Length: 102
Image 1 (cartoon, rainbow, N blue to C red):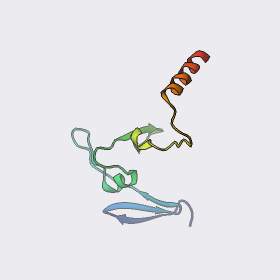
Image 2: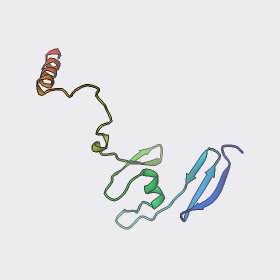
Image 3: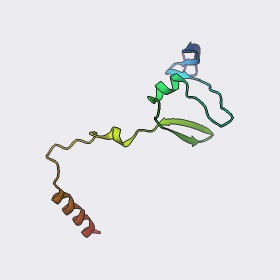
């Protein structure tokens, strides 16, 4: 089987192309008179988005990529600090030191 080998199947009512390196879904939706569309369930699941979430459209080389926008709140706790939190005095000194270096 080569990388260009494709096999057609159906998943949740959508045409799905299975290729040598994995699965690729080709899903269509209709555009309304207002320029709106509904993201089909397999697309929402693939992006991990739901009601009220935001998506970003990236247009490049004649194609559009749809990305989930991750709110900053989801980043809370990503960067761990091994010591105690800095005091206000320490933060103010760090800011003043930074300004003095400019």
